[in-house]
Image 1 (cartoon, rainbow, N blue to C red):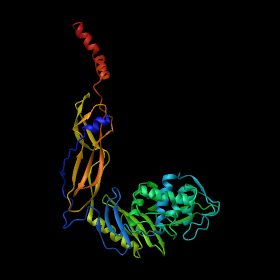
Image 2 (cartoon, rainbow, N blue to C red):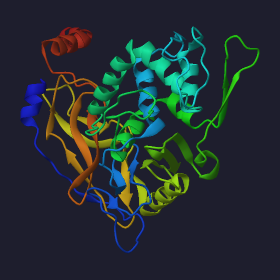
Image 3 (tube, helix red, strand yellow):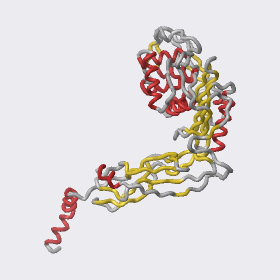
Image 4 (spheres, rainbow, N blue to C red):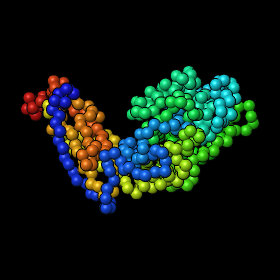
Amino acid sequence: MKTRLAQKLRSLTAVLCLTALTLINGSAGAEEGDQVDSCARAAVLIERSTGMVLLRHNETEPLPMASTTKVMTALMALEYGKLDEVVTVGRNAYGVPGTSIYLSLGEKITLRDLLYGLMLASGNDAAVAIAEHIGGSVDAFCQKMTQRAAELGCENTVFVNPNGLPVQGHHTTAYDLALIAREAMRYDLFREIVSTKRASIPWEGRSYNRILNNKNRLLSDYEGATGIKTGYTRAAGRCLVFGARRNGLEVIGVVLNCGDWFNEAARLMDMGFERYECFTALSDGETVRELAVTDGTQDTAYICAQGDLRAPVPKGETPSLEYDMPDALAAGMKLGDAVGEARLMLNGRTLASVPLVLSESLRPRDFGFELERVIQNWPLLERQAVGE
């Protein structure tokens, strides 16, 4: 059936000019994002839902990233671990230099609490404990980190440790790190942790808890801030992964080796919010078209959008909507089957797309259907036969 449908598919493009959002002289580059000057060695700002680059500065230069490494460590824990699992702290995690949550050798602590210690207090020891618990060893875990980063589209990222302490060959780019943060922000717990200013977790063997304070000043100073992670070493300089949401537009940014990190992050986000707006062309479940049905028990059927079709659009630009769908639908297809695609376009570039799916199942006009119809009509036929 899918083969028959594929053979019948043809591109039916309906370009619908949409109302301009806000008229402002000039327009932001939609192809690759705007190049901007920055006091950071490298910087990028992307839109979270689409990954579209809004602003960029040396965004593909490989650089050390200090404790922003831990965004990837947390992502791996969320993807491969169970939050309520109890982690036993090994010798390699005990006494790790730098920032610490002061884990004790043999201490038992849940993976969930380790994640809070990792992201709020930037515990280097928590990172090693997570790595050994998930990967069996730090080396094996780092190999998985690097592989997972590549799967996310990171082309210049290598992890040699899970915490970002200085070591040869450990590097990423501003763009790659933004991709990693974008994936991590899909997890509700990650979003909750990185937006928390202060928390406490158990401290085995003590009558009081560990108090964890988030060093991300943007959570208090920037409207709509969502996190995400600070980092600093002498080799990497000040590094920051950050984000915010305003008026339906959510951005994620990175600055690497940036002395004025919080102010520069705020400046880049301000620039992004000033230049872009979130445009929603279709809502999840919205009916798009009524199409003919061949060899079915009904003449037509509706198709709808599977998910919201939205994207950041430069203010003053006019996007268009394109549909790719068949002329007709074949009976036998099921509710939710994909039948085409809707795309939001700007200057020849696809900003976002969603599948178009069937809103109902299409019953074929087959022997079973005809037999059922005869049985349902049998009493009427009998009455007609005896002259009632």
